[in-house]
Image (cartoon, rainbow, N blue to C red; front, side, top):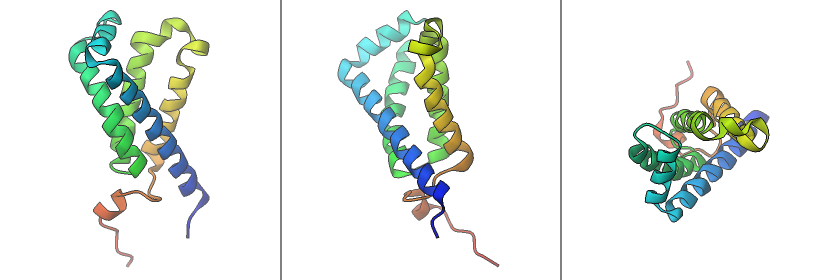
Amino acid sequence: MLKNNEFGGFLIRVVLGVTFLLHGLAKYQEGIGVIQDRFINYNIPYADYVAIAVIFFEVIGGLFMVFGITTRFIATVFIFIMIGAITYAKFPLGFLQGYEVDVLLITMSLYLLVAGSKFLALDNFFIEKKKKK
């Protein structure tokens, strides 16, 4: 029987995944070099590599999140990406008009990290179900 929180977790998972996917695609379309330059201007260490990693994890991680593949791992990656965005780019802007959406994305990711999301998740096909004794 489907529990209400399973459907709620599914909604959070899909919205979070689509959000990161679209942001990653926008960065990719803007150009990796442009994003690397922006990250350099934010004084992000190893900005060239971090830019590529962020784009990769936003696109691939967004897809994985939508389809429920390694949800907890991707949620953890999203948390680190958002903490980095707040730390290096948005904190000086303040909460409003700055990093309020990032806090929401961190909170959504934290929920999925703690609770998971098995409803309509492809992980269900790869993880052995515990046998009831």
